Image 1: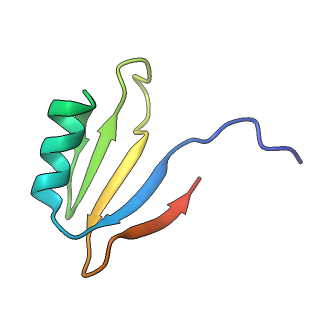
Image 2: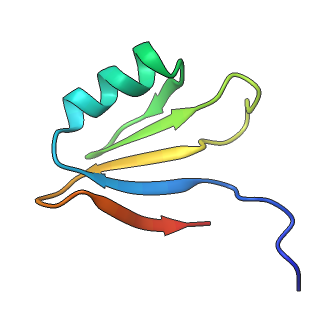
Length: 65
């Protein structure tokens, strides 16, 4: 089976508030949910998040789905 598109990317960040500010105010994403994580959505994707940010001791890629 071939991959048709990337649904979302999940990242670990060391400063969730700084990352939140960057993705909301610089990149222009919208916050959609947050229960210990930050779920972000692009303007052209109304039904699903495109990025998940999770506070962690080290920054890096969690997963791509």
